[in-house]
Length: 458
Image (cartoon, rainbow, N blue to C red):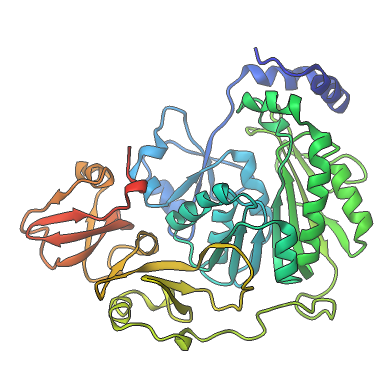
């Protein structure tokens, strides 16, 4: 039996009344687990045909699925190819509700470890810009890997406070997602350690932080833009009260009702247009979502004086070295044309075509395409994750059922027979079922493994 704080139980009983016993009974049951398909690489329908797992659709997002606990989804090669992200089902709702369109400039303000940022990236379809931020540089490092595995292209990963981002970006973003730090009440069933943390730091500690974050976010949102505020707590103090105060502070904001799914509850008055997810009503943990719309027409309001992308910089503004140019000439042009080339020491980057603030702590900007070593270009792991079978001349494609794909993922050298090696030489893109996994170097019948050590299957 999960031992829940009495103060928490008393408050929940007041919130749920006749549903309280049913809610409490949910702590005796196991929670639900889900994965979300990377639709920038594969459609949900095609993934269903490809995957060996028995999946069931999650009602509130078209590319989310429940999977069984016994299915080792994080050990399968498709996971390493970035075809899906493992995510708690309720947590899929905010990014799915933000109505992202290709070309939008989006800020994920509290983005680590990247569950919502990866979905926002997919919905941009390689256009526009995603700034994925977390104030903690150590947590933000997870964003670098997760967005690289995902094959994200037009993204920047930052580790700054909301105040610093506001100072540098100003009114810049079309869509903003604030998955705010919270007391975590909705995750007590999933993570028992959060119960002890709640006893030390509950809703009253988080509500001022949430208001401060939202205050900065609203001021970075362009007229006509949309902001999603979400938490994984049941606390009215952290949810409706925060939204009510922000609406009073900014009369240009209004609530926009998200699409309701069976089992969803409305927010408490006067925030009835918000969504509450109670775990005894749906197959997911506790969550809250508010969508805020800013009055005006995006990009045409005089109040938005700090927009920084009035001119788009040309990809040819920096001279690309010949070894880099020669390699990229064999890569699909949509991945790199129109982007700006930048070299930092030996590292070669392809940057989104926007003028970005200089006084920001960027952990990664755009794509790390590779490195120049002794005058030769060596492609990066991140570049491999953006490619598929046939995108470059030298490609070797494993079936996910081939035992050698596991050996490749463990960092081993792969031996090929003569027929398999035809047409290979030097840098070789390694794929599984047609999707990029990493690089190898073909030499005399063997593929020497170039998969990043930190990405290998343990």
